[in-house]
Image (cartoon, rainbow, N blue to C red; front, top):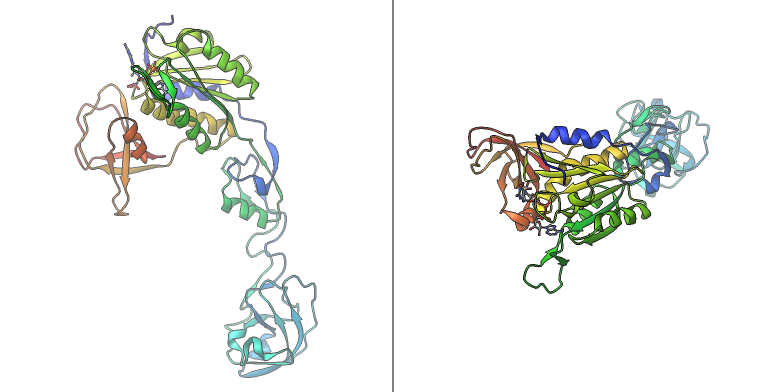
Length: 404
Ligand SMILES: Nc1nc2c(c(=O)[nH]1)N[C@H]1C(S)=C(S)[C@@H](COP(=O)(O)OP(=O)(O)OC[C@H]3O[C@@H](n4cnc5c(N)ncnc54)[C@H](O)[C@@H]3O)O[C@H]1N2
Ligand code: MOO
């Protein structure tokens, strides 16, 4: 059995994990199915947006000189809906009825909305009387390229594609993007005491919850869960689980339980050739295992306690998943907030404390630790990070909270 003979910092363990990550090869995806994926190459506009001078209002395209003095009655010589190809010639004293988004005739300089005409839309197509002078040349005309110029950067690489980013990409005339596929994750719970949640429990047994928790966290992180299984504390269960994960195409296997110092630590006892087991200077989550199969699958051995497993996922698994996808942002969103209660310091370990965050005063968010254990984990909205320190924290002290 491997001995734990040293204690390392969180940053060192994370460094070990990230050093083993080989980002996926980029692949092409239609924009319509790329939401949530990480963009691998910058996207530049394929077209000018708008692609032609177009009307920003429903109304009449006019020449400025004709409406310098109002009221002015002009002859309507064309009707231009959005999508039209027409570019009617307009002489002095003429106007074209035009709808929002339609190309403004080359001879027109300004659009007058229906609201500034005598009879509005009811005025028909013969003549229009303009009653309010436009604010000047170009009023209500969106100029070609005024939003984005062809060739301009629309979204830079290494960010996750949100609906808004994809909308901007599609609007710039780009139909496919280069992205990373979703990481494929296998979640393996270990422990002979575990029973599927909802099943009857005899003395000594507990409901299995980490696979639900860790698979859910993986999915929330954008991964695809390809295997969810439990193995007992005896035998070669973890090795069989790795084989099953490999067959399912997994990039990452997340074990929970069986990594500390007891007699039945099945992950530690059976996977010593593939993983290294460390003591990390953190609370909770001190015992951590990590390794890589010869085929390149990342193996995480998280502690079994559900809060420890959740904290360990946030600190090590989530950044690894993001790095596999080529995401430049490996950490969660962090805010500085005041604690509402004091907290005992630990001089030798960084503490990660599940907290609720009160945002009711936008100028002063506060964090309150939730109850101990799984119930409190369910209540938490983030983790307060309390670095090793000699003095206890008091209410009002500022801490960094990473939001889920
Ligand atoms: N002598 C020592 N004992 C322990 C040490 C130590 O340093 N020396 N470290 C403690 C710390 S810290 C932790 S954390 C735990 C981690 O132990 P394991 O990762 O080996 O986890 P287990 O013993 O298998 O389980 C711990 C706890 O969590 C429950 N559990 C496990 N898996 C699940 C699951 N899938 N769903 C729900 N609950 C689960 C399990 O029943 C245990 O109660 O070790 C300390 N001991
Ligand atoms: O490291 Mo353990 O996770 O303190 O309970």
